[in-house]
Each structure stands twice: as C-alpha cells, then as structure tokens.
Amino acid sequence: MKNLARNRIREIGLPAPRNDDWIYFPTAKVSHIEIPEADGENEADELAIATENNVAALLPLAFAASTRKQVIAAGSRENGILKIRDEFAHSIFDIEDSAELSLEVFGNHQERPFASERIDINVGKNAKLNLFMHENDAETITHLRHFKIKAEAGSNVRVEILHTGLGTVRTSFDIDLNGEEANLDFRSLSVLCAKASNHTLLRLHHNAPNTHSNQLARNILSGTAFASYDGKVDVMQGCTDVKSGQLINTILQNEGAKIATKPTLRIYHDAVECTHGNTCGSLDEDELFYLESRGFSAETAKLILSRSFARGTFSGEEASPFAERVTDELVKLGL
Image (cartoon, rainbow, N blue to C red):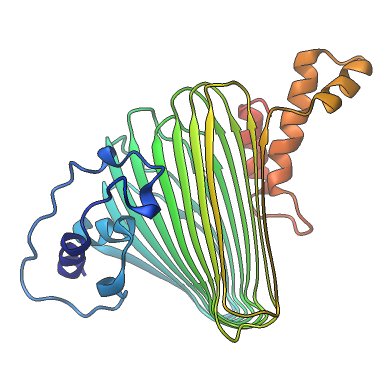
C-alpha cells in the first residue's frame, strides 16, 4: 500500500487552497510534507488507492510503518480503545455480522507538530459500531484524521465527537451505507476558544434503498476560533425510501469567532426524504431575558443555555455507551 499511496499523492498533489475539499483548511500547514519516491513493486490495491482523491486518506498509508488490524468475531460484543502514538498510523477494524464494537479513539499520545491517521472500519450485516472521539490537541499541533466506514445491511453506526483542543485539526469521513436498513447517527460538538481551528469533512453515500442517516453538528466558538463543517450526501440511483437529515447549529460568543458551513445534497432518485439546515448567532435574547426575570444572573443564564445546547448534541432515545464519558468532559469545560 505504501508505494501505491505515494504514487497517488504525486498524481493528485498535496492540498492547495483551490481544492474544494480543503477550502477552509490552512493548507500551508501540510505543504512542507515531502513525498518520497516509491521503492519497489506496487502492491495489490486492496483499499482502492488508485482512485482515492483525499490526501488525508493517503498520507498514513504512504508513511505508516505497519497496519494494525483487529477482527470483532460474529455475534460478539467488545469495548475497545485505540491509542495512537506514531506520527502516521493506519488501523483496520472488521466487525463481523451481528457483532458490536464500542470504540474510543484517543488523540496522539506523543505531542508531535504534525500527525496523520487513517482508520478503516467495516461493519457487517446487523452489526453495530459506537465510535467516540475527544479531540484535545495543543495549540502547536496540526492533526489530520480520516475515517473510512462501510456499513452493510441492517447495521447501525453511531459517531460522537467532542472537539475542545487549541490546535489545527481536520477530521474527515468517507461513509458508505451499502445495505438496506443501514443507519448512521453522526453527532459532533466543537467548544473552541483562542486561535483553535477545527474542520470536519463528511462524504456520505447512500448506496442502497431504505437507508437512514442523521447529522447533528454544534459549535460554541469564542476568541478567534474558526470551525468549518463540509457535509455532502449522495443518494444513488434506485435508492428509494432513503431518509437523510443534516443540521448545523453555531453559537458565536464574540465577533472574532468564525464558522463556515457547506451542506450539499446530490440526489439521483425522487422517492427520498432529505433535509439540511443551518443556524448561526448568539444566545437567544428572549430566553436569556426569561431566565433573568426568574432571578438568575446574566452569567448563570448564559451558562444554563450553553449547557443545554452542548448536552443536547448527544441526547437521544437510546443512551450512548459513552454518555458518562461525554458528560465528564463537558463538566470539565464548565458545561
């Protein structure tokens, strides 16, 4: 895979500001990377590297010393932790039919100026994936992380992400819903301050009828923090009864903070329900006035509304395996 990835990066080039998938990211942060020549014969293209256009998906393959692979046996249930220590890392998880994996991905344990990781997750028929990440990088760090998730019929994928770091972070997802009744529930919360720069790119493909997805991304931004959310949903031909929703909510706590959003729907069949929405502003003045009229101070009223906004990101009918973990992290943030 190493040689294929190196050749492919040389073909498409490193990210530039004109690249649609990188328009919000400060590409100067990755322009210093030197891609070595391929050494030896090309390997079998098991990961469709020859057609991959996302450099974040290729860099870990081009430089990682080895690939870590784990199989979750059919019908089993496992809890896992992925701790990444290398500058470049590649991991594969195969969740076999009717199995369940609850996986927490920790940030890079070595504070490196630059880190790039790729995680491939194959979710079998009627299998379940619960994925949680807390991004908390230092200000001096640039971090790219790419997920490629393939979900088969009857599978359920739940992704929960909490961004609180001060670094420059890009988290990208390439998700395929390949079988009927495959379901994705994607939730992301960014609580950023100072000069933090956080970017999420999601490419979601409904490749089968009767597949469902929901995206909820929320941001609380202060200082000169900048966040972006680029979400594209494809509903392929013949995929009837698809339901897909995308909602992005942002609270800007001062004029220096910025948000950029880019929702995109590409629908090749009529019998679907697809929506997207975006809101951006400060805390609701009427709600603040109501709380203050009930005896709460202005600061307490702001805290109550911010806490409700943040915690509501991860609420749902089914309790998340990481609910306690999320609550603990939000408490540390005063939310």
